[in-house]
Length: 319
Image (cartoon, rainbow, N blue to C red; front, side, top):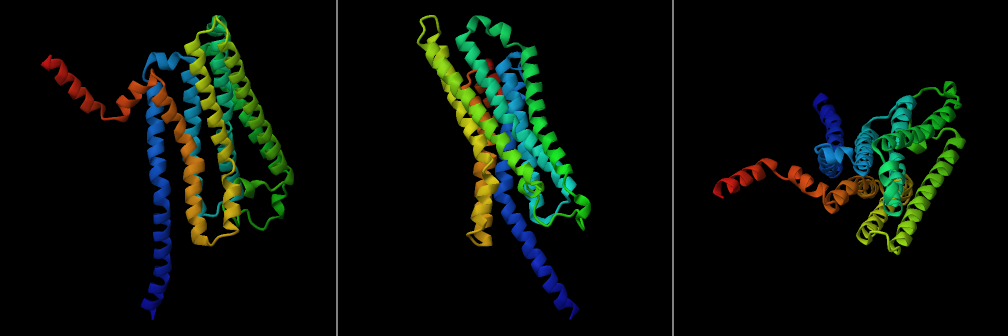
């Protein structure tokens, strides 16, 4: 009788563990690949003095650094949502830190767009306006502005009467929607992010229009203006991907309401990879491939550098 009870107990546990492993593989493998590529890109940006001292590469490093941290935190939250029901304080810290990192990307893209605008429209003043010191100040302002949202949400969260709860253990999985205990929190979140993305979009589009107008001037470097326009279009595309990532949870909730559990799990994995993971890796790939300064160094580190070093040495000896 005890053997039968053991089998009936172990069976569901084994199936649950197997389901967890199988459902985690499509998430974990792309995440590891993306983190590796982004990690190599970050190392590349710190490997040469010209990359460490150029302002646009400093801003790119800040963008990728925040994306990597957010991707790691998103992966942690994804795993925790399977088996563990967190307490409200722990979930609140994780969600607020995730929002802090998520807002870094659009704000950094705004500064990068303005840097390209100054480089094309005011080339003589670029070296005095866009300096390492000013870039560091801009990065500090970016993190401070994003932190202001987090602090405001914490203040709104403190108004909730937690003492009336029987337990601080959450009944639902940890998510931003679950932490909007105060109705004002959700309204503030919508207004803030609407303002953020509209302002960022207007800034990037305005920079693009300014560069396009400047390209018609006889004194403007046509090649530089053309490259700047392509870069600004890339920034606009990245901004759209950042906006798309904010729709992950509402999309998943809407899908879960109309499909069964298995299909909802499959759709959750697909949405997570496409909407959350992929945008975090595209920046490294796009910048690494299209930038003539970064590309050879990035490929050197992405590929087997030792193998290439041996090939180069053999070629030198043969010559």
